[in-house]
Image (tube, rainbow over all chains, first blue to last red; front, side):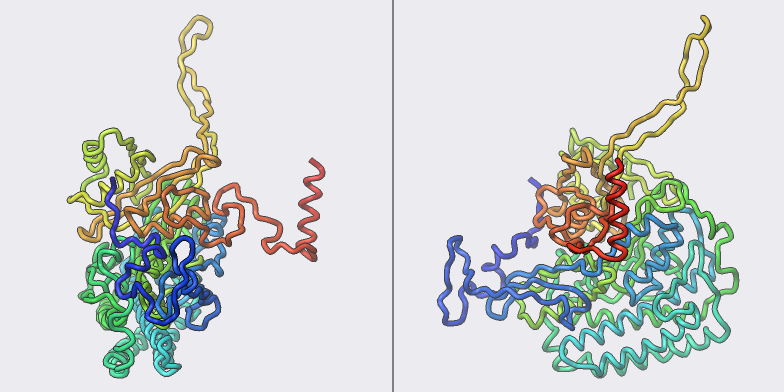
Length: 406
Length: 211
């Protein structure tokens, strides 16, 4: 007999009565109607949250079953944005998919580019030059700043703080988007990286501007934190809510800040040391409780570490070429074989699995989307919680539907 | 970390009878994989998760691949007697490979920070015997991804807790990631086709009538 994981909640509805924090008897005066199979069907309320609920971060739906105000069952439903990205990629050249990766997680196009470029480089045996590696680190860490800042803004908005924190976040995001626009020509759909390097070099004055933005960032974070970290409402709404135990998080393949908030020390920048991350001095912040507050706090601390990486990278940026001389832009045909490459994108482990049959198009192109897989345990985190907390828990997972649905 | 050969030898020692095969990988990535027979898949998976030296507690990427039936031509040297003299002659031989569907699991260890170990499972064919054992009981992270494979490739995972379509809608019939998938004329079927859709449908049905 195999050893199954005890936390597994395959039949959530059947075990609802034994959940911690859920009263086996309803605490209201209506007598439960017991139906034929023994379930208290009459007392349960089914709600379809979404797909257009403003707090659901896109076209995402949850089929929720409530007992009073508590969640008894929750099934995420998605696919509204599905366009079969993987099938499209099988029909076009390797480079042709690069702009498509921008549209996966449209908040973090540069890390998507990097993950794809890294996988193709593994498949074809390319090595980007030094300067390109530095540029990749700089753009990726700026992307992390954008993602975490805005996520916190959205999270607080889900709690009812309409506008203000999000506008603060967008103000800072704008400064970084200006940098992206100056470098790549686009604010969000950057399409910047190539197999074996980067597309363009820095425009004059860019590094100065970037240094100013980065050096001012901790001051913004202090301001942000002074508003939020000890805020009574935020603390009351997030501490002890949506707890995810470390063992379950590992088994469910959860990655990124969500995993680290549960206290698991696993950051692919440290584990794989892809690119040149072994040269930078930074720490991996970990949470202790695995609740929504820890996920918020881990992201704040991660941004502070990102600022440290950025300062080191900007200081150390060498001169030189930005493309591997071996890299071919036209008629690019990797040898038959397969490769799986992964990076730590702001939402977790973003991987690309590619199979080449020697033709100009990939035979198989697979995206391992972190926010899709992080949704596996959404139900487990929500069971027994109040319906109002579901929105916050979902917010703390940090999903982008462009990536979930692909 | 151990090489895949060593891992294979240890699995064979621990689970006698398990059918394992090394699948080499020619790309510079150098990520060979291990083909496991379906009857022992769950046992092998539990072994890999529980083994003290491996502790592969994290199934990162789970995906499907479609391999339709293919014919490969290979040159083989054959000895033939021509005019009473034995000669070596090159002959083209057609090798048929029956079609199958494949599920690939990329496993890592979060505890020991090592990996990947790549597992492959293959179905018997692409139509009525497209069944594989589900590994969701071993790695919960495979749950949604196996559902996605079921949806897009049509592999049925036995013992999966909740095997439904996930990205396509419930009434959808085909499996779009298969190589021989044909797009419908109109995804959003309307009883009265018009404009471009009507043109497309006319062409489609005319070519069918000519057959």
